[in-house]
Each structure stands twice: as structure tokens, then as C-alpha cells.
Image (tube, rainbow, N blue to C red; front, side, top):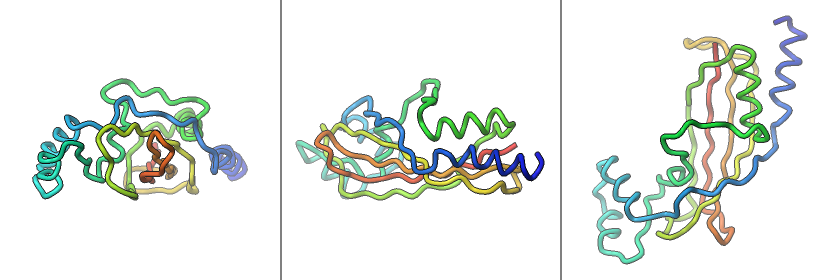
Length: 166
């Protein structure tokens, strides 16, 4: 790409910065079976798990926040109206088809209670200038998902950054 083409491409990638996608509701409410499976997979046997076993309601470990919004083992089709989906489509079309998650930052407002139904709302925070790393040349894309429960109470957030490269 020429410098002019690169600037135009970057502007198209950044056009969605600050925009928010449609809210999406988790497939299942917070539930004891998923909490137990997660704790087993993480080999977590701390005080919280003991409390869970003794409690009628139970609470999910805070680090499970994003678990409730994962699509499972199904092919992921990005919503073309989602600002992240638009950026990923533009990058893929331009040859930046490889992607790796680089880091995440999570904030937990409080433990999640069994029975809560979570909704996530994703917004596009940043698209970096083109960078070259040991993996290749590409762009870092940062999103933020804000999580609320069925009453609209904010329960946490998840900032996630990917590197899309060729």
C-alpha cells in the first residue's frame, strides 16, 4: 500500500471506534453445573468452591465473567453491524487474515449469583497504527464488553485486544 492508501485504510478501520454493537444475551443463566465444571477445569478448590458446595444459591468465581457470553463450539459468524465484525472483515479482505489474542483486562463489580442472566454490549475502543512484530505485520484491535444482569445492573467488563496480521 502507498502511504495515502494506508492512511485511507486506517481511517476505514477506525471509523467504528466509539461505536457499540447490539447487546447479546448469554445462552444460559449463571448456573451451578457450569461453575463446578469451570472450577474443576481450573483445579480451583478454594474457599469460594467450598462456599458454593454449602450454599443453596452459590456464586460464580469472578473470573468466570466472560464464560457466560462465549458462543460454545459453534462456528462464530460476526454480525456485520458490529463494529468489531466490520474491522475484522476489512482486515481479512486486505490480507490480514491471521488473528491472535494478545491480552485482556477484566473488571469484576461483584460475584455473579446463580440464576442471573447476563447481557454483554461490545464497543470498539481502538485500532492501532500498522505494526510489525515477530508474527508479522498488522493491527492491534481493542474492544470492551460491558456486562449487565437481567435488571440492568453492571456486573463487570472485559477489555480484549487482538493482533490481526499477515
